[in-house]
Length: 539
Image (cartoon, rainbow, N blue to C red; front, top):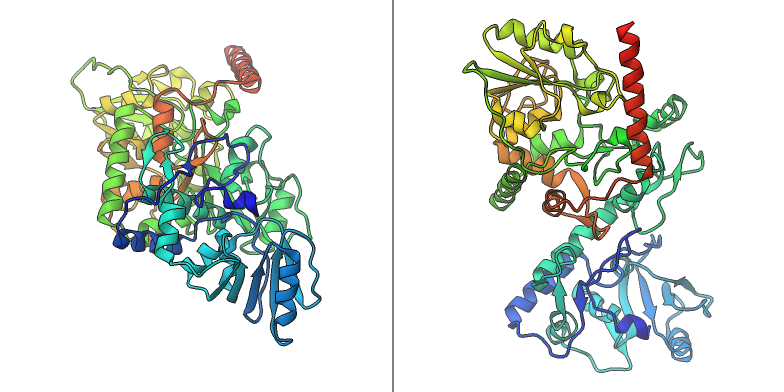
């Protein structure tokens, strides 16, 4: 336990694949915070349950309350156990196998907060950090080998006396920021603890997905469902067999849907570029309007504090200024108009994508969408932007140019979507995320299908929006739910789960991972496929 004593009280969980970072450093001195602020920070640590190995194993100790014993010296521990009444339920947390037939013996790293939650009293070495955690938690405590300490003084020396650094920037931060970041990590880890398997995840996605699904133990990726697996299963449904999906459907609530996040990467998923953001939904999936989802519930029933909305506004402005979109980054050169007509941008989509199949309503593909827009906007100048996955030759949804020009005035292939949104007076979409990106830029959006951002009073909706969507939201309330609360993000430099602001800055600064061999081969495959398809059409 001596090694534990030398570690900072607040520390970074060992997320799979994460790099070593500077976060907390022990230093001489007890800090200079007054007692009032110390009390507030103690309350915050208690609320967020951070400190110690808060990510570690949580043994199942259901039943009556117990006395928790953690004493390093074996002979001293034996003496203590012998003195305890025969009726006492004892949990002994040791560094070696137990030596008392009445105690439940636990070894190895554990979440101290979980162990304390069922303890009525703790007997612990005076200098073990469990003693401090027990005091913070308000658990009755008996120290071995030391005098009873004052909680404020102990916290000031052990926690407030350390120096803290932002692991993403390296800059010094205040204690509160360090506590809240640990709380952010804890919340993510706790949300994953019941996930026992992951199905449908391509090998090239796993390195970035793993830390975002990590619940303190290994993420078990598989291609088939283990019948003996009692916990939840994270599923990427597009790559999971119908047989497995049918098995999962028999056990309601077992499957947890995982999909790409809305700020994903620099590069296409179809090119095997790993996602730096995912969404994890235990209710449904955000692009299926036929059933509720966690995102829909966040928007409909969420409480949006002034602080949260202000943070959302700042994030929205950062995204717009940096030119970051789902697959791209960097401010684009403005596109000049060639005429004074009202410009409408129509983004194409992958026609067999689940979002289109589930949320497209009665829109029958990209050509049908163009036809509808032209029918309702006879005098407009319509720009059509093919979907990048379709352009790369990987997915369905291509329109021959001559057919496209029956309804569109211009096909735009090389300009980034952010520049085209800036140019357009309106954006018309089926379910495309480009509509949400247009809302970020305060552009008028018309939806012909039912995307997740339809029905909240921010868009003109032509599709069958569910009657469940009754709330009217501001753009920054929508951003708070869609970008701050719903997805999970990974910092490509540190390999740590991070807030969205960090990922947006990384992408804008060009810090996303370079293309590997798999990505290069996939892009070559797409170009060849597209060329062969073009030859077939020419014949």
